[in-house]
Image (cartoon, rainbow, N blue to C red; front, top):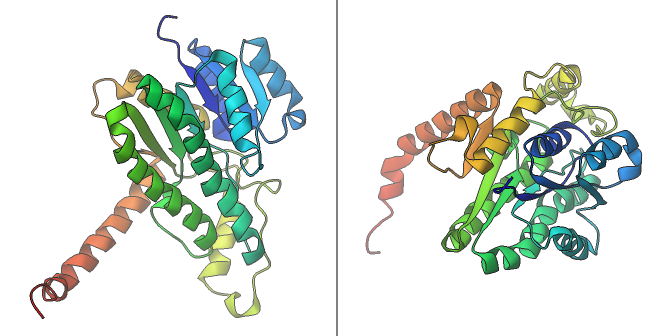
Amino acid sequence: MSDSKVWLVTGCSAGLGSALAKTVLAHGHKLIASSRNPSKTPDLVQQITSQGGHWIALDTTAPDLEGTVARAEAIYGRLDVVVNNAGKWRFGLEDARRQMETNFWGPCRIMLAVLPGMRARKSGFIVNVTSAAGLRVLPTYSHYSSTKFALEAISEGIAQEVANFNIRIQLVEPGAFRTNFLGQDNIQYAPLSEPYKGTVCEEILGKLRAMDGKQAGNPVQAAQRIFEVVTGQGMAEGRKANLRLPLGSDCIQTVRAKLDRVRENFEQFEDIAVSTDGDA
């Protein structure tokens, strides 16, 4: 197809990444899918490559991440759309730094690696998958939400910096979707310390465990919506471009409630805020 784009998608081994990879190919675009360890999903890799897609090993924490991205770009000579989807969720202080490396610094390094080519071509689209948890925080989410808040912030800033180059940054903020994200192979729960047993923290952890496989969100539908926003087709046709794409009714509900609380907070203290203006 004449308007076929070259996509690089990270975190394609399952869930949203896998669904998006299949969607991209189904619409006739060129795909470079990636995962940390492709040998763990041979059937999926075969499915993608048999349809004309490429699959590469890409670890967002690896020292040679930039080299891997450069080699991916060399496959077709350009990258039109880059989707930073790879992520992890860990509990406990010792895992917090590694989680930041994967969820924040990895996407940052990928953005820095692809922006020179996009600037030169005066064209590009970077999709950073954050989370509803990147807009509001629940008990036990602190470390994970911190990585997503950070990615939200840097994306918002870079979006303004690269707009004149016809490069668009798109934040995708999923709620709870039926992926393996909450499965035992992906999420590692730290033991709850004694003072927090019987508190809201224990309640939230229990809900997370019970939610696995029962989430309302459909990753196939989410992948289609992301594709439509990038290409301006389907439900996105004719809509004004916006930085944020919320996905899932739970995202809308919980983030709207957070915005209401922030608005109420600001209104309550507005007189104190403005009282600090003026000469000393």
